[in-house]
Length: 603
Image (cartoon, rainbow, N blue to C red; front, side, top):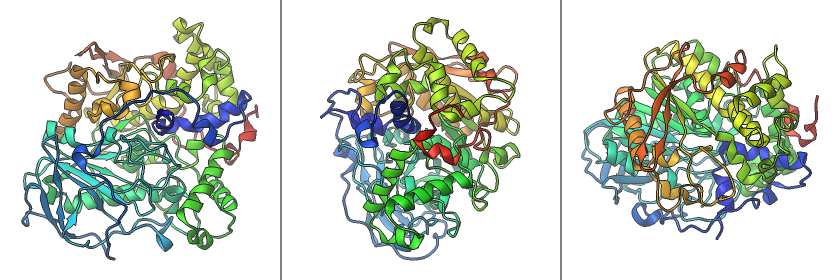
């Protein structure tokens, strides 16, 4: 079995570019056909069920009601927890910790609850045997793979807990939010298991399933909160942590929210959400700010397209369809749209968000929250895996600007497209014969690097000694793509932060990752979760960020040894080009016309 669809599954925010670029350069490809582009290798990833059990199809019976009272020591044991919702059994893992898998935290979001904010439950059938991952939330079908949680069901709102023991120790909690462009992926993927982090740091790791795509982010005027339902799932899971994590050996007063790609966007969005205040105490954002926050007109247009392709006119009719029929309509919307992975995501709806999350953060919405933020050096080179034309000189910076009106809107008002092209060509003289890589460097900055830095800039005003910025520079061998210079592409750090590189063998290969750098990063994340400071004895001193020198930790390795170092304002000229552009979802904004591929022209 090749890993072609696996590559798409890991693509994060970039998969949305595929149909648009293919159309621009003359490839008439559907979303389904696009997933078949690219090369991979057969790779027998270790079966995730060896130590964590297998997923089942049966859901648990959930009762109505609100979240339970605070759980304290009420008879828990290392593999057995007693909560106000009921008793729960976990299983010992090969990592030396206990896993509680597939714990429901909300009523099934079906029937009248489809598209609605999540509703908590007050009990489950006790004891609950939490030894199997719950299903992934509905998403476009992927090829089954042992490293992935590929079973899907609409009854999917579960979470997982890895803990050294279900005792009364009250360890720091690290709450993981997976990426996938708010369309794909699952917390059950091997790359996202929490066992090694829990064992190494004596911490509790929680991961969450949340609604994706149309199910999580369709915006209905008559259903308050509907356009942010997937984000509200995450918040309800955080409330569950606050109420119940003591029963699993965790400290509800020390919770770090943590995510990559769409998970990073989620972290930054939650930090700007008044309704989430008090549920977390630190944040780690890996590759993503809130630039793709949607305005109501854009979100409403995406929802209208869903109704049209589903062949219905009302929310009631849409709820009457099977989830497979709704998903089929979503896939039609994706095939029609210019930027697939910008269709869904948080919306400034006047209910959950009255203003852009970045604006709220700038005003101090999360003023007491320390942060780690950063990106990989070559984020956008991952696009080459799925878009063959991006491997060629035809993909120039001008072509990228022409293909995507959003890019042109990102150019500061006092500058022009040609100014951007000049700055990037000057910044990368070694790429004079590789115009495509210059264009992708620009894509890296517009989509991920600069929007992430905007959150560092906003938060450092309130936490001047407690915001830490990194750039991940180590380039994986990527044996699945031997002809591509992927560099340190999007997601390259994932095998280091969770410690499961065998979950992505086409990128990391069979020999794993440099142990020195893996240990350095895991220990920094653990130290930060415990104290709010990532510094530890096995790395150079990580200086807090400021707006003058912009000190940045460059995370890198040579062979097995870490070579991480501090550098002030790396790639400062390209960063400074975008000064004055907030990347907050309003400037630049996604527009309803971006939902049509016919807009691949100059305005």
